[in-house]
Amino acid sequence: MGFERREILLILGVFFLMIGLLPFVAPVYSIIIAIATYFGIHTFVKQRKKQIQKAVGEGMCAVCGARINQNKCPNCDGIKGI
Ligand SMILES: [Zn+2]
Image (cartoon, rainbow, N blue to C red; front, side, top):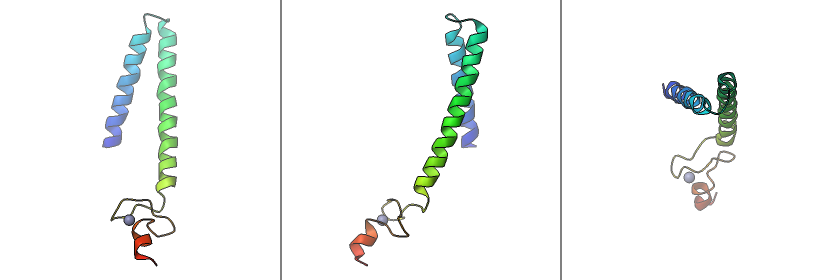
């Protein structure tokens, strides 16, 4: 559901960009720029998601929220002194 709302916002944003460009360029170019922007943002978001998934990977510590590294929390497990 959250993804769909973001999609609508993106389409709205691109739509307003297209309207904003209309006084400056030919309508055909504003449409091309809008579509290019839409797909550009889409690709960017996809890559960001992949990067975040890779970075989060092993998950977060339930106690402090730090990134889990090799099944250990760098903060909490360090204090326990394994
Ligand atoms: Zn922790």
